Image 1 (spheres, rainbow, N blue to C red):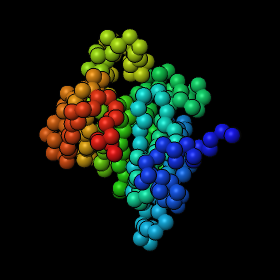
Image 2 (cartoon, helix red, strand yellow):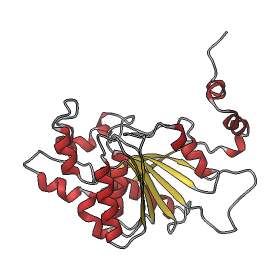
Image 3 (cartoon, one colour):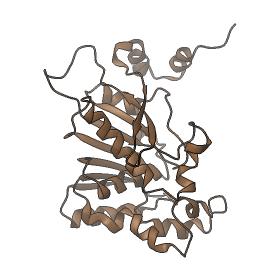
Image 4 (tube, helix red, strand yellow):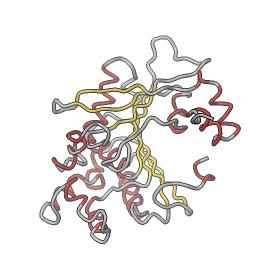
Length: 277
């Protein structure tokens, strides 16, 4: 009659197909805490999941491709719970770096306040996802020519900003993202809980409106040289369809591969099993 073991909890909630996969531990990649240097001499953190498969392995001398993940929030954090959206890729030959960029919670107060104290959203988080990927490439763990990034909500904004501010990533998937920070700030004026949230993350409004424009990915699409997939919920009241459409149209006009998939029955965060199963 003791407490239920975590693995038993997973079994009790998993589908029959997932339960069979859990039973084969050799398919599952365990997270490794990674601390790496940032561009300004500080440190950032993340969790590295290495490719794991009991049968298949890379060709001799070949380094695996890397998928970098950027969590939403932006002042939340990722975690090490069992996630199929990570295990899917690691079981198919990808390494995954799930980044807790500066400003994330879970690493002490000083680390958590770096985004807000420095109004650093769109700068520090972007530097960290880029430097994390470059750190792994420098260590010889991944192939620097096969690096991609994805993120949702605020994390989607980070991954789009990374495409406009660096050439680290070859492709990206942005889910219900914010491409225009000025639009988001205007919308937040009617959102009591987050009314002044962006003032600390980006700058005082409207005094520093130019900073919002400069950091908006839609303002810097001309510098983007990567393929982008946009996934969007049609009823999203926060990252509205207009945001994704504007980004998609701008990337397409710039001549780079892009696609926009809109789900009519989704809002901010995909929940319909038919869309995510």
